[in-house]
Image (tube, rainbow, N blue to C red; front, side, top):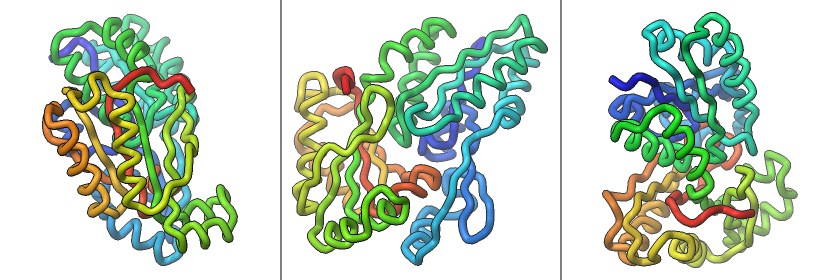
Length: 295
């Protein structure tokens, strides 16, 4: 057992089995839909398909971040065991949960003055945040100390690329990010916004692409532009989707054709209920380790 515990939040969008196998405790965000509040528990309470169908039927989910008390409850048992804590948060560019984590750290610091709690901003989201946690768990298991792993995270978080496209713009209109007319004509014409995360961990629209076949090619091309060694890339890769598995499989197939030396099979996860509350159905995201994100 390591002398420290590595923790994260549910918005890392990997499966419950992944977090259990890799010994990564996580704190749940929350969402409210159809008048009821739920934990963002990785599809265990509400299956992802049912959640996205509710949005298609007109539901408007609302989300809330992990609060200070949740962090205290998650970390305190490990501190009592005599273990330190390294917590990695969802990007501060899209959430204020890092503030709750830092507040919890201050509360526990006095009570457990001999223990250390380090909080690291992932500057990432969804399964990109989850893939970053996988790399960190690998290094923890290889024997890196708490300080060494924290330093690695600081130095490599901007090397984790996040690329997204959406083929259904309805939720962008409902959330006030585009006009109703833009959503209507975009959907009718098959326009798919291609987006990525910048160096401040914000989701930034880059360009509109049509049709969907073209944006699938574009997102894979962006991967080849940013990974080390291009088509000879040997690192890891993850994809997630918001109830559009067929498109996710097409992206995976194209990547595997162009990059046959990838390390391990490309996992396909679901965009979780918190991130998915804002994207809605029809979103594909691609994550990989590459050059440094600069803007």
